[in-house]
Image (cartoon, rainbow, N blue to C red; front, side, top):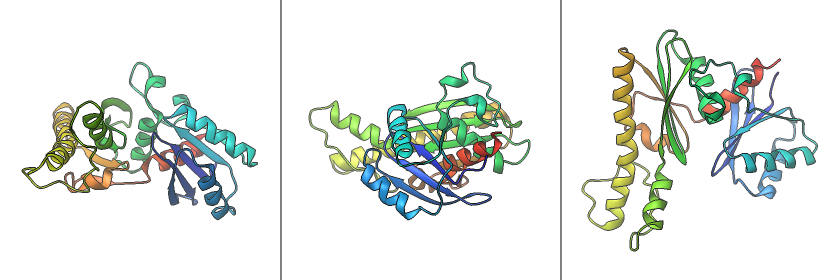
Amino acid sequence: MRANIVVDVGNSRIKWGLCGPDAVRETCSLPPDEPTAWRRQLELWSAARGPWIVAGVHPTRRDQFIEWLRREGQNVRLLEDPGDLPLRVLVARPDHVGVDRLLDAVAANSRRTSGIPAVVIDAGSAVTVDLIDGSGAFAGGAILPGMRLMAKALHDYTALLPLIPVPDRGPTVPGTDTPAAMELGVFWSVAGGIAALLREYRAFCRSQIEIFLTGGDGGRLHAIIPEAQLWPEMTLEGIRLSAEALS
């Protein structure tokens, strides 16, 4: 099944991808609850009417978005069943794995060197660091809070700490005031956690690994993980490839 537009409904944004014959060619990121913004983008992409393939980790927003598309007369297919993906999943409950993690694995397999394990880092509201084994199977992974979530928790659950923006790159050490110290802690909690997990995965695999990096904070982290392939469209590409595999 060929998709014209693929959609990833996340916790903080809705990402659309306009598909070419062999890749996602154009993307946009939209608010999760503003139909006016959706309609403007729909008008911009009016020449590429359906089919739409929609997946996402926020079921309520995802279903509201699908209902809106159908009211607009669009042909939509929901992609949520792990059994519909061209991917072998080794965990006990594939249906309990976030579909975005599985879609990232589908995309990674399209670029991963045959026989070489891969790690996919998706740095969004939550950060996932997942392992694809040498055969291309999803083997599981780790989940940790993302930078915005960590910054918000520090503000919400303390009396005096401010709400800080996410740093664009690794902050200077040491932090010489409270916001700077928070930026330093937030950034390196995420970056250091990822680095530690990569060491663990290399030891577990006893081989080289390939690394893919995606998500809203992927660009912020790339300088810390320069060996990673930065791929902002990775989840959307996983949706496109999975749609192609559907009969």
